[in-house]
Amino acid sequence: MSWTEIVIEVARDHAEALSDALMEAGALSVSVEDADEGTDAEKPLFGEPGMEPKEAAWEHSRVVALTDVDADQAGIVAAAAAAIQLADVPRFTTRKVEDEDWVRLTQSQFDPIHIGKNIWVVPSWHDVPDPKALVLELDPGLAFGTGSHPTTRLCMEWLEAHPAPGQTVLDYGCGSGILAMVARKLGSFPVAGVDIDPQAIESAQDNAVRNNVADIQYFVPDDFAESPFATARFDIVVANILSSPLKLMAPMLSGRVADGGALVLSGVLARQADEVAAAYAPFIKLGVWAEQDGWVCLCGRLGSDTVPSPR
Image (cartoon, rainbow, N blue to C red; front, side, top):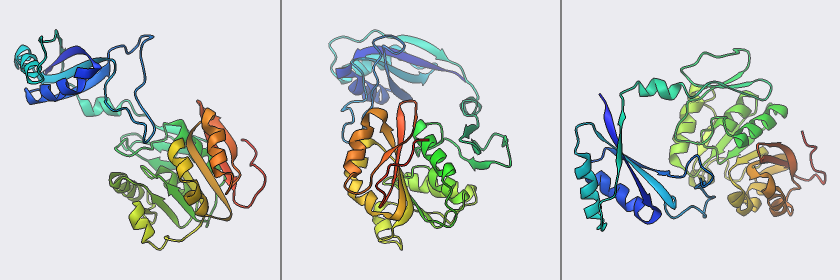
């Protein structure tokens, strides 16, 4: 089986409305891309929480609609244009999409990832490169954290460099649960994870069972506040989020660190390190432990006046 894509280049003002109208007119799916992708005019479209772009579109957008191969593509475009009252039916091109083994194609894009000295993140369809390593079986999914992003890698490398058998760990903003699983596999206990997204919690719980660390406890914030950890302070608190929420959570996260315990933060760009450290200065003195691809990992210990040495 094959399909046909309709490709329309439009201004930002029409991209979202046209996308919705194409779906109503019979398209199977619609995506919006940067029409300037691959050129000097290409622009990123992302933001930190509270600063997200209002529209998922670019100044010069490309709307791509997937249709059945025998669908009336011209009719779909005309109906969509009429629905949003465009003065003229936009010009469009079509391209054929051949049937493929999409599962196999997607899987081929995710290979095992080697992190630090002895950690491997391995998708379920791959063989384990080194059975003696600390192995995490983890498939790409809805929750952030597969080990591919520098911020995740930095936190995993910190945990590997500072194993804490028998010590308590809190992974705040746990996503897929990958950091909590690393800590648990290194011997920390008990280990807890918190995330505002219920889907992330479900994913983290499934991942923990798959990796034989089902005793990790994951919570959304409200449940965490009602749990046995409600007032607990932890030997290690790790948070891989973004700079803006990290600054807002400085009193709360610092208050979760036990005396002499470590606070480890990532999701911070190198240029943001000083302002994040300043937000935590009244509670914990933080310094840059390591940097990777423009991102940093900050850490410090409660009650210590010295900044940990960089890696």
